[in-house]
Image 1 (cartoon, one colour):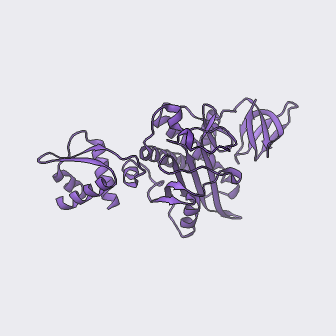
Image 2 (cartoon, rainbow, N blue to C red; image 1 turned 120 degrees about the vertical axis):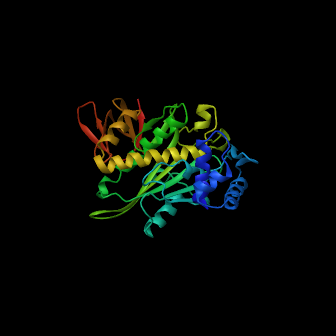
Image 3 (cartoon, rainbow, N blue to C red; image 1 turned 180 degrees about the vertical axis):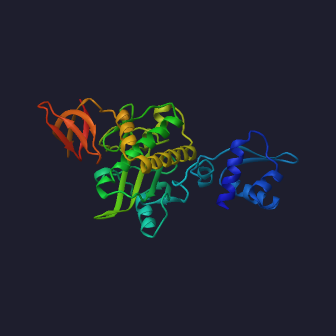
Length: 325
């Protein structure tokens, strides 16, 4: 059912005119009656599909929902998203993906949710996760790398998210070390990776991605540590969530394939180009207290920040909050 509905949506996206029932029947390998049932199922979840005798079917509009059919219809990936689990409401997509991975879920499995009741950010901070507006997803990966290299995948997901924002809006996001995306200096996305590993290798890594797509000002908590925003607030228009998700998963798939083939180098270079602090003086604080200052040189192979202080000492920073001076 899901696969057939996704195929119908993909055909609608590639055709501006009506598509005959006969052609849909032929493309799907099912009867005309079965085509009608799939179209009816799509209508029930909010798709407006026009049917005209002797002409066929035409997609008029799509609902403002995360629709796995729609996401699948726009996927062009080899690994990421080939298994897609959609949950309307959950405590945490990362926890769901972790359980699936422990039970043998294939690499590239994606867990999507419309809302989270227990979303969290870096260092245990709360991530506001209201329904109907944002993206909350987690991806299962099984790379053959050592545990100390796992943070590299956080930087990979940051680059993928930045690319997706550029492709679906007119905005140019900046990356803030280690795992935030900013627009106009305000946080629009956060990344939280978790892993299961042995001393000699990784069992799996969970890439957790949260992006504020269509959140309005009144939906942000009052006690945010840092200014936050959404793509809607910054661009002035709503973001098609299903299209955004498929764009993100496609970019993540391309970057991951390149990572497996060529290592961390290309991702590291692009991340550093996009980083708001690259080459600038910054202060790193921990628990609200400034502790280290200097010029941001870049990141090393483990994802640690390289900071050169005024006395020409190179510091390697693995945690903290960065503020550009």
